[in-house]
Image (cartoon, rainbow, N blue to C red; front, side):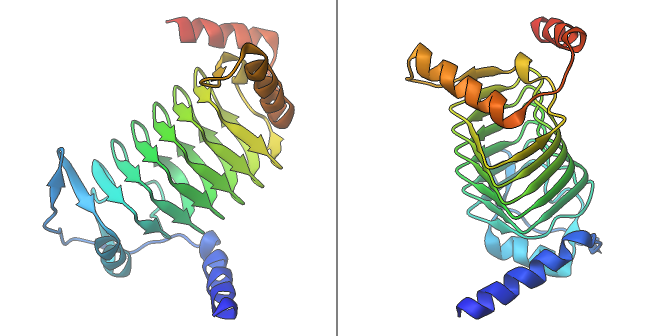
Length: 222
């Protein structure tokens, strides 16, 4: 069983360089919850097999779904991902997660390139063994999130909130606007917050000049 799991993982990882191109003209009859389409694992698996119809990922509610393929340049705005796992998934080509909510989930062994989490709410979510390149967290609200064993290249934290977040064993390059982010730690002392902020800066090594920082701070105040 262990050998089979390893083989499945290796096969899935080999597909990360290949774009998912299946499409479908059919539409499903969705259960609705708070104005969002409800997507469970069975419906996701069926769509992944037959091709995702237009609008499948936008304004949807995913609960306990493992997502292993996603079409490039996908519009996922205003969706909720509750206890979901993005497992060995290619997330590429201006994928739009603006105004989405992520609760208690995980991004595991994913390849992420040109992804927008602008103004998203991301809570108790782990990014593990993944590559994040050209990813925006502008104005995102992140609480108790962690990034471990990840490669981070050109991430933007303009005016984001990082509450109780951590970064460990990461390789970071070209991290933008970290000084404009509100780095907090609910329930912690001022000294603990200071140490956490120093640890985050030490891990991410933000690279930006004073003039760029001043301009970004002015944008935040607006």
